[in-house]
Image 1 (cartoon, rainbow, N blue to C red):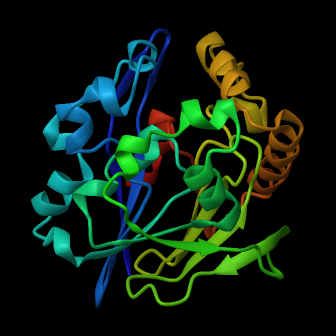
Image 2: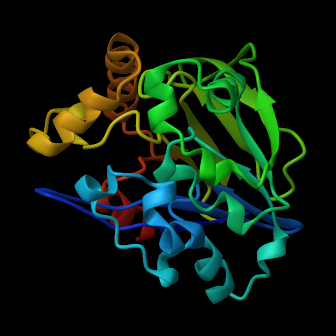
Amino acid sequence: MKVHHLNCGSMHMPGAPLVCHVLLLEGERGLCLVDTGFGTGDIADPGGRIGPYRRVIRPALVPEQTALEQVRARGFDPADVRDIVLTHGDSDHAGGLADFPAARVHLSAVEADAVTRQPTWFERQRYSAAQWAHHPELVAHPAQGQRWRGFEGVSALGGIDAAEVLLIPLAGHSRGHCAVAVHDEERDRWVLHAGDAFYHPGTLDGSARPPLALRWQEAAFAFDRKALRENQARLGELLSEAAPDLLLVNAHDPGLLEAARR
């Protein structure tokens, strides 16, 4: 299995250029995406699908950055994307779902409930109903009893042909936010995609103070700040171990995306 690291949505937030880091998992029997970034529907109707917050994050919204076009550019048939695993359901992660209408969409059971029921005002604002209007097949995964590198409640996602995939509860940014771990057989390492559990590497290792815009965004969108901080501490511990068989990435840091591509 091979992991491709894609940018499916450059964003030009003042003081903090961002990407939408998406994983394309290439297996012998199919393809799988981890997150989708922005899609063709967002380009056609940014106001209706992303909403007013697009004025803050200022996404590029260009066709060549969509997962759909990047799958095609690598010589694959988009119909071979049979599974999509979401870290969570925010618009910059779920925007490309409708470009793969037959794909099963995997996410935590808690996040699936939040996306479908939107039980709070905050969740009604953060999840875009238009991005889910094609009614994809949802596969909701409850937390399981497995452990992985110190993390609890891990679920192994069976039935995904492309790869060995683990869903790791990392609540805080959203109600049911998860990290996704995939085994990159070609490079003999695990890739841990932490989604929006952190925006800037300095949050984990203290190497630099994150830009003000990112600190504001993290606080503004956190569903549970206490859980967010606890999980950031755990990720920091994992990072400090410097395991040679583990690559830690997140959804939006350009530097981590470039490092993953090397």
